[in-house]
Image (cartoon, rainbow, N blue to C red; front, side, top):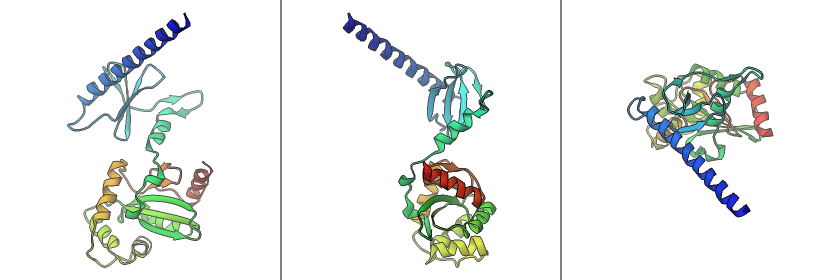
Length: 238
């Protein structure tokens, strides 16, 4: 009797799983049919509220019904708690495993004991990146990995190459970002720079600066040094 019950239960669970996978596959197919050529749906999952399904496209989230007949673009807020469920989910999706970052293709700066670690993606023509670089001068006991991501203007790449090819990359970076002293143009193997740009695209980094903390948390934009100190402390606690 019990054996038959568990067989029936397992069969029911498998049928439910197959049904759910079928719905997700249908949603993926129907949504991709409306997207520009080559754009893919990266994930579909049942949301658990309002009978909606979450659809991940790049760094964005859409919501739809089980047949994908309608699409909702926007944020879902829980009124009682004021929690932004959409932003919470985006923050989770944006997290990385810090140890997986290829730090050999980043400009490395070690200050003090270097125990606290962050990674940044920056463009030499980014005003907020320059503001961040100046504020980081006063932050101690930190290791900073800066990945060059020249996306803002036509000469961003030329400046990035000059910094990358400098004998002392960290000095060249700070000379330019803090003191506005451009490095001499030089020639070298820029494969590391190409890899850095490819990594930024893979992580869907659309603007600079982008900051990653030791626990993988992403900060999408400039953050004052005092706030960054607090964020690093929370990350260390995790």
